[in-house]
Length: 267
Image 1 (cartoon, rainbow, N blue to C red):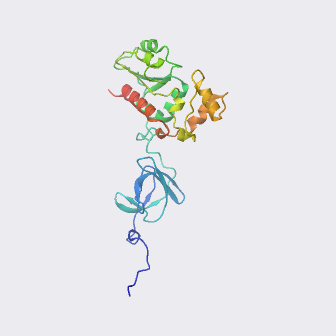
Image 2 (cartoon, rainbow, N blue to C red; image 1 turned 45 degrees about the vertical axis):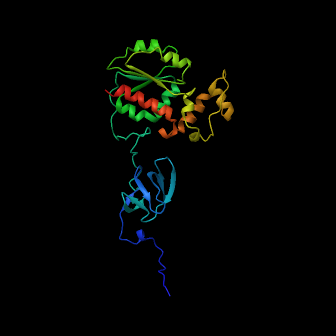
């Protein structure tokens, strides 16, 4: 009669002691039983949350010998040296702890309004300070050609402009076409207002509602979603608080801002 070993411990848990590794943010590991591979985004008492390259999150227990690090079996432990410094900025760039802000460049990035400026600061603020790029808002782009002429862009003072609703046939596209300086880059996103560049999933709504033409877009959105329509400024601040990184923004805005930063900083 065949005898069976009652010990059901997986082989990787029977080997010699393995190193204990702090579960610091952005550490990439593989969970041994499922093969799920991702970066650490959060470590709490008894659990660690990983995010894979598709943005999917999984929570795993901090079990001994529970993970692979570069092919080695390790035990993840909760960091004990206090909160770890983030290794990436909100835009996804490598963070530079302690870096001083660079003296402001002659070049600038112009955006349409205060909300646009606040959103750019929220996600790209750390990057812009290191690069010495100042963002200013225009309160609309109707006078963009004269604003550009007054700025007098040149090789050492390049100008980038972010425009809302920059789609073929729009008023904004006709205005942008009148800016012809080789030292100016005008880019935009397809959304009527920069609010719409925030992913609905980040706000807990299924989608941004359609607002009939002729109706103020922000007011219409607030009414459709049951938000206070008489104080859109307060609503915007609530939206802004839900934006913690580039992952909360639509790709069309991300690409536009990255192009502007490159235009005013890359020689």
